[in-house]
Length: 116
Image (cartoon, rainbow, N blue to C red; front, side, top):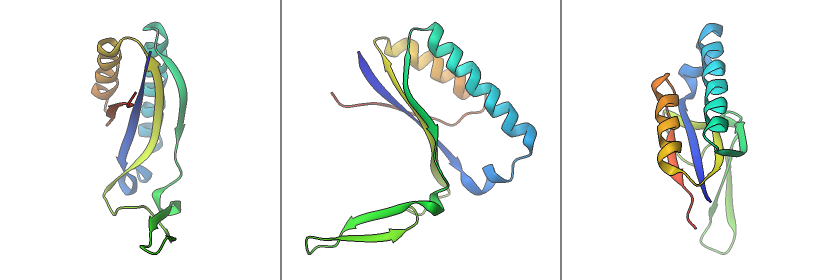
């Protein structure tokens, strides 16, 4: 069985301004995604939203054996990762098909197989 990380990038500022109906549509889409995963025999190991990137803490080597710690995301970008799924599956083509259906409902995702 392989593990896959499904990242959910989104433009945070735009996402925060969406009307409640759009968020409800998104929640229904995630519910369908969960059902599709279960029906396809794919196991959700972990799933969750992330706090806004403004609340992130970035840590980089400081070049002297220590770390430089700063508030905020590691990179400045319009899109930030707002959530994730960690999936275990032995059917990558089937999982990709389910992810494509999820995306076709308006979800932006990044599909990544974890290194063995």
